[in-house]
Image 1 (tube, rainbow, N blue to C red):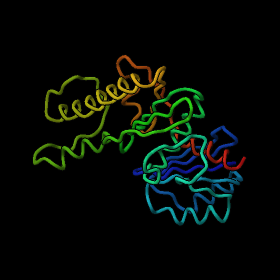
Image 2: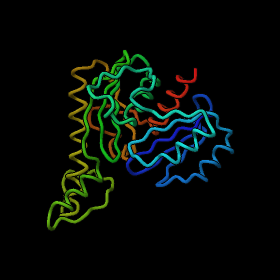
Image 3: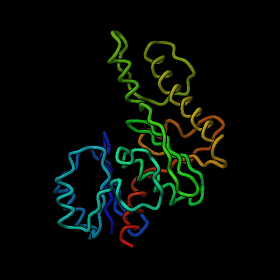
Amino acid sequence: MNLTIDFGNSRIKLAVFFKKKMIHFESNKALHLSHINSLLNRFSISNSIISSVVNNTKNVEGLLKKKTDFLKLSSSTKLSIHNFYNTPRTLGMDRVASLTGAHSLFFKKNILVISAGTCITYDVITAEGNYFGGNISPGLDMRLKALNTFTARLPLVKKQLTSEIFGKNTSSSILTGVIGGARLEMKGFITGYKKIYPALKVIITGGDASYFETISGNKIFAVPHLALYGLNQILLQNHA
C-alpha cells in the first residue's frame, strides 16, 4: 500500500493507494502523528510520499521515514515529465504532482491543468511530457478577502456559486465580480493556450473546481485529487 500526502496552504489531503487505485481519502485542517500511525497499521502501508508548500512537516516526515520507505517530492526527484522551468526549485510541488497525474491519465495529449484552490494555477504539460511554465492567479477566497482588507467599507462576502451576470447590491456585486471575473480569466487563458497547443485537453482540479466546471465554449474535465494520483504515480516510478 502507498500513502500519499499533499500539504497545501489551507488543507492537508491524503490518500491510500493499492497499486493505481485510491482506496481511502481524507482532507483535514491538521494532521496528528497518532492518526498517521493508525493509518499505517490499518492499511499495512509500506511506501509513502509527501508534497508540501508549507514548512511544518518535519514530525510527519520523521515518522514516515521510520515506518515506511519514504520519499519527499523535490526538484531532484525522478519524474516521468521533463521540467524546463527556469527555477525548478521554486515550482510548487503540488503543481509538479498534478502535472504528473495529468500526464499519466492522458498520455500523449497536450493538457492544460487548472488547479482552483488558495491560488488558481494554469500549467500545460505537452504530449511529449514537457513543462515550460505557467500562471499563478489569486484564488476566490483571496480575491474576496482582498476587497475587504484593502478597502474601508466593502464587506467580506462568503463564497458561493452564482450564475448572475451582475449584482443588485454591494455583496452580490462583489460576488458576481469575483466569480465572474475568475471565470472570464479562466476562459481567456484556455483560449490563449488553445492557440498554441492543438487538441488541448483541459483538466480542472482543486477545492474550488465546482465553480468553474462549466466555462462557455470549453469542455473541461473535472479530476478530483489529481495531485494525489500524481504523487502515487511518482512513488510507483521511484520504486519500480
